[in-house]
Image (cartoon, rainbow, N blue to C red; front, top):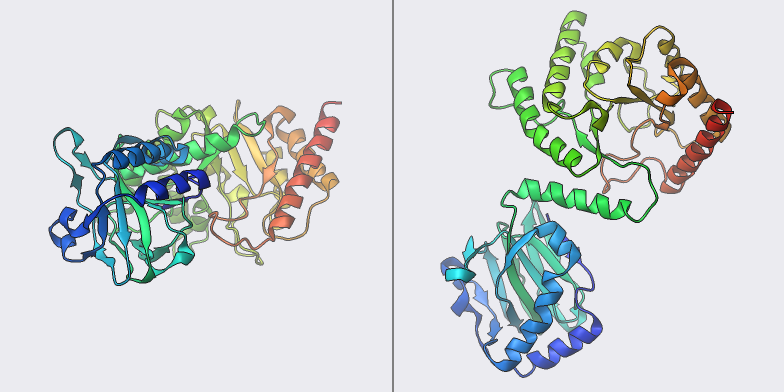
Length: 431
């Protein structure tokens, strides 16, 4: 997790901090570095033992400790003492990993997060980028004064040489109250969702999470089944966290249809493999109430001919085996729109809901609200009006960082059509 936070210090805070820094004494920064880092550290550190240093700490510390995003992301148990560094021309800090523990005695802490609060405007010095090796990439960070970057202390990083000017920064470390980094990321995602949901009027909120099917590659377990159930044990923790936070859980499983498209297997083998994976999905959902779970399956987010996709009726027996309270599937996609007739012969189990897609992510055509309403009514007439939630076929992007195939303005137009169509359908069904 790497986060950049803007405006941690206001312009007034910056002016006051710089005024205090201007009166401080300095010493060689290598004196406080660990064994390996000492050889590559070429900067100066401010002496904060004076009354002016105490004033500076009193100014900066509350801004960091009370910042809502830092608290949500790091779940702090303890902050380290702050360090003010000054890097002039020719200075820098070569590649290193921060010590796993900092301080001594009661102030000793485990370094889960490192942070750099930039105090110099980026146009006042050349070089000096903070370069962080993360997820196989180098992230180069040089932020406006008053902004902060938060990153794992376990990462390899460096401060690039400064070729002109002076780089001032405040650095420090945080020990989290949650030692497991994966759990911290889940909690941060949940807090982000809660914060966003609090700003709007909504009836309920769901959070998607991947299903055990199609995740990673097995290079350890003796069988695919062992691997799937091991994943299920791991996913159960994430699922529980979502439900315990008060959200609905949506299990996203685009891989299930792929099993039915695997022509290397005979039909019986495909069905048996699908059944095994559904068993694993149910294992991942153990002890979670069905009414808290939505199960979503689809055929991918791409725009294409779709001629090799399995028909929903071929999969529905396995889909309905999933221990979920609602089932989400593609029905706005013209390749599958006709499949609503399936519900004339397939009985939806009592107490369950369907979430058919009535707008599609596989086309840039914006569905007319009347067509959306017509699609909703078709399902309501077959499974009961109280048992239908209108939705999109699938998400328009797998990740927020991806560029969608459908232009974002069209995406929002489709969602407006969905809302308008749902209102028309409700007026028809409850008139």
